[in-house]
Length: 265
Image 1: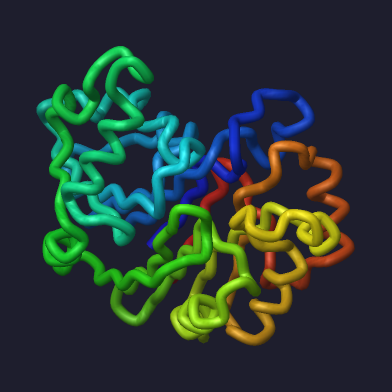
Image 2: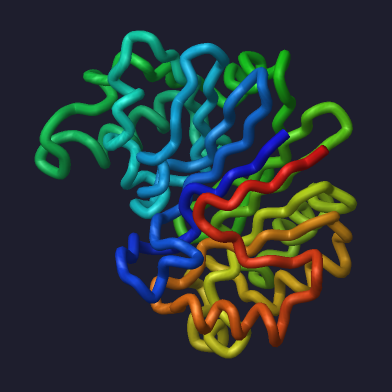
């Protein structure tokens, strides 16, 4: 099983030379094996994902802020009759998902009605999504602390597990933190929203994001084999991320890089 980060930036894409090492595209994560392809969120990095025709593709949204949606119309595979993409979200039901996508991608905000033009989409309730995926992986949802709501996911393939917690403000809602921790305990990989440092977080309470230092503490208590920090601040250049990695991160905690692949054996 392979995890590939196609977008690791938060808020907006940054096409600048000082961001090339870690990447400037916004959130889109691909989890795949020879039998399936699961994509979490469709930020600007989504346009670079090769949608397979020969195996099932699943697209899951954590929430509907623009940096998790903005790449959706720009992957040409969405308009191919050869593809059938199962689309769901743990945050809303099928009707709510259609409404969220229609709000973002219809006139006057977008030149066409994407949901009704797109032949590749099969939009479904989360329970139907779970049933469609059951031959390939199982998936559980848990609520995250983020303005407007967001859904975290635990993906299980055999005895391997991946936990995705985007976007989440750790320390603001104890019950949600406990659920996140429980899902992550002894997992193979945790994907963490580390947009801020602890210092930056002091005047950004309620913004819906966690810190790098919180990620380090979480990795110690939840004991995943690896933890990748993503959703990097659009202000944080490569040299700062490298310095923070040197100063703060133990060996099993890393800053995710665009196009980086992580194998779970």
